[in-house]
Image (cartoon, rainbow, N blue to C red; front, side, top):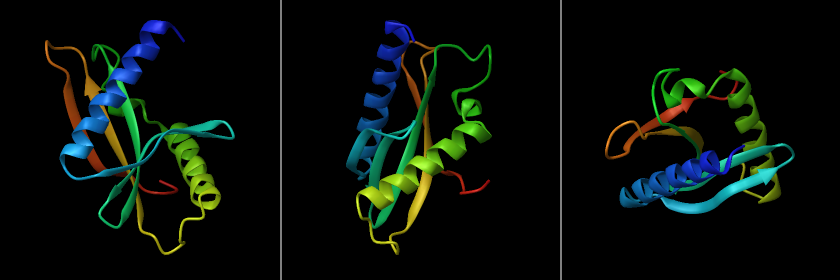
Length: 123
């Protein structure tokens, strides 16, 4: 992956984190890597543990950022979330959900879109 793409992804994650914190979410982990998977952001929305996938695009010529979260990517996120829960010894009764943040860099100002419950386990 090119340095430019890495920097763009980092900037998108920074914007997503700033946005989520501005609406009251609390950061639990960032760039959590485990067994071939990564969780971009793990946040708390009140009592709910939220696994946030951040996607970005500089143009929508090949689709929107959210369209890049395909079945395979969702399975990988679910697997890594399960490993996170086990490794961090999270109470099994803790409510969890999967959100997505899309950051579009195709205008003068980046545009952030937050989708709560972007997908469900096994979907």
